[in-house]
Amino acid sequence: MCRETRASDDDEDDVTKNSSEKKHVQNCRNDKSRNSSSGKVPEIKLDSNGCPIVPLPEPKTWSRKLFELVLYYLVLGSILPVVFLVLLIRKKVSWPDLCQLYATVQRATVSPIQKLPFYQDPELLSRLWKLSSAKPYLEHNALEYQRREGFCSRATLRCMLKSIPSFPGALVPSEHYGEANPDRWAQNLQQDIAAAAEEEEQPKQKNPQKIPPVHVEIVPGDVSYSDFIKALRRGLQQDDNDDDDKRSTSRRVAINYLRPALIGFQTPKWVPMNFLFGIGSGHFSPVVGMLDTDASNQALADDELLVGVFDVNHTYAGAYLVPAKRLYESIKAKDLTVSKSRATIILSVDN
Image 1 (spheres, rainbow, N blue to C red):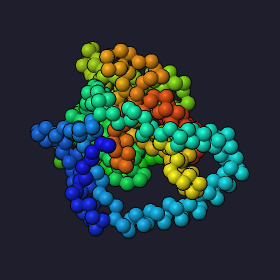
Image 2 (image 1 turned 45 degrees about the vertical axis):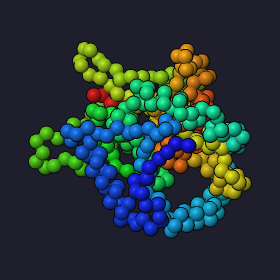
Image 3 (image 1 turned 180 degrees about the horizontal axis):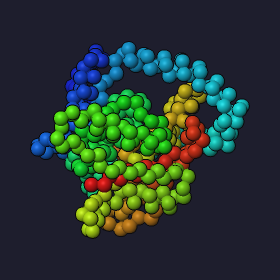
């Protein structure tokens, strides 16, 4: 199991909201000073299992845990099944889509990726973090976990932007509840960066930081498997340099995927919320690399590729490797809230 470190060594549940907010503010200040300071950002280290050592979010208080249990299993567990049934009756959700999602997640319940031999294999993870697509996340101390549920899209964006050295740290959007689907993620991206720039700008500042051009390509999850692999290769390739105008482009990849399609239903799955979360709980995380050769550097076939994901939910111990086919199925899975598949996201920044 990969080793992680908490932001505080105190594991008791009496951590106050004020102390959590103070650390959040300090983290934002660290982001803002990342590129303005002449000192080098400390590189993230790997543990003995090949996983990055990333500070954990503050532990939940007992009151918070109790609140979430009541909210998820009593309140939402009573309301959402009724809402879901109404959507089925009104044909807002189709039975074929529901059956397909159930079959996909049930297959993962029988064979979850955690039981695969390469899931968190130390040797393979060590190879992963040596890839040119993965090293910037370590070198620029860019990895972080989401602070709470619903923050995964924003934590993913922050990891991606912080890994690009030319992107000003002051313009990295702050942590907050994020978007639920890739389209909204892309739509709000420029707005959030501009808001961060406006917040940082001083009335008498002589040299305000320029907002670098940021582009987002959304690759739908229902493209063919070969097109999915091509998109991953394109997004993970080394930064491009244009010799004519001396510009370069940095690319990063994220995914919006149905994680239960990789790990299966929570048990017991007959509990309404466990079933509904299983077929509907989308998640965002960065893709840091892809292993497309074996130990002897021989090219692997497309159906043998392993994709490295840094899961921004610390519950899943950071980085892990997923068969590209399985990851493709989790991204192809339909998002019932928008009635279309999830997506691969390629973010490009012009340096």
